[in-house]
Length: 324
Image (tube, rainbow, N blue to C red):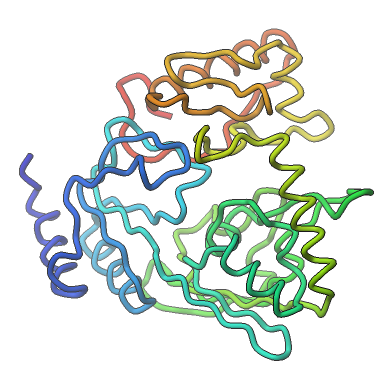
């Protein structure tokens, strides 16, 4: 299909800014997500430096073209119709740790295993709790990444915001500014990034000294805990938890109470490991997942009176009548 004039202009501008051969047309998105579902992007670009990322974002914003910033592709469902615009996959992975425990990491830097392995071996604590969770720094800030405190007590939830110092953002006006921790207004699965189109270029964290052995124990225990409850992404692709947490109850508990574990539509299935996670059995479509989500919502509402709200992000074009 021929690209509209505006997309052609963006294509040319991106190639001029990043170099020829760097822009992919009708690029498959499913392999770039943990769910392994979704159609292609009209254009896909993968900036490798902060300068390239800022340049690409300024170009697509100036053109008014629909665009989406992609990290590791977790917690999202791409529509079967793909994305009719520009997907910018952030591959800026830089990070540095100084002698005082101050960590600066690019928005596209990978929390696990890259950064956590590095900080743990260096004897700096704060990120080891999140081992095994697929996320970039930008995604971690967006959702205020969290996990249970160390075993055996696991008496509270540990949040990323506990170690955040500041971040550099690219605003919709094209300007770069630095914000402190308070700007994010962190909450459970929430930050101010939900309310704005600001993009995290990099962030700074303050870590504390700890024993590498103690941190390795936490990493091992947390990964084992997740392995019992979360399907392995390499053989059972998923987007993580589908529905938002309901205080005092838990979405998974309600779904399980309705006997829905193992329920399947097409190749989308509610895993037996965790009722709030759906897996792709190999050929699931976004339509399969949307129908399974609707089935769960209707059954839980009818049998318990609770309304489940999806926490995953729906990206791109869905079948008629299926748009989220």
